Image (tube, rainbow, N blue to C red; front, side, top):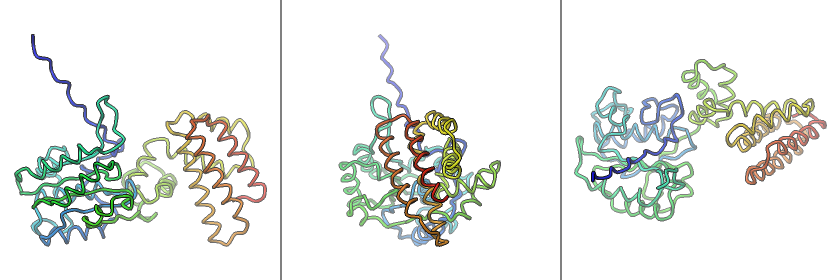
Length: 352
């Protein structure tokens, strides 16, 4: 009898890839993070980089793009000043090609994988983190460096966090660990203390709109401005919004506030039906509605407009309503209708 073939291991989906745009490992351009890049470049090119960096910032802001940039340079030039001072590596360089193809033997990526049933795991497990021991114990390849990226440390369970701490306590030579985190304050203090911080900042609105003009040239200036406002200074979040239903939901949230006094029942039902057809539509719409309220309240407060307390109270009440409805998987129609009535009642005392 012929031996049974092993079932091929399925690769986990790349949840950080936005459809129609390059993955961070394929991206050479880093937008608006010159301070963090400069710190990393000076340390690496001095020949004395830290054993580990904690790269922090909101989702989609460029943490992975910076990590892959550092990895390419170390794998190509090592901790030397032989390469460019911005840590760039030519796209046609063999190292850059291997990193883009996720095939460089000196680079290890640790992230959530698939479980035995083929579904995405909810945590970054201890088994994944333990791969660091074998990886850093290997003989150095060409260039003599090994780089591991943890994307993200926020996904680790307690056992994985302790395994990472042990790896940090026994740093190998000619090796770099890049730890990505959206919320570094939640990590173990001992992990934070053994890493140097590279904090990435949200982009300014003007800066983000300029970048979006390059990446989304077919989109109107008004839509790009809306994306920049909604994304909180994150190019990644903006591209995700543009590629799905986010921009539509955000626009509907604005309309619900602007047309509060004149919205009729059929229009509200049509909006609820539209939201119901979108995956996680109610949660997303609730978030956009909350942000739209916050933007308007802040703008009015800046001009010393009176009677804003009622709008602040309404925003808080609606936040609670959408959170309860999402948690209980309620029909969006009731939640949207109730929100529209509450906004209309408040608007009768003065538009926002």
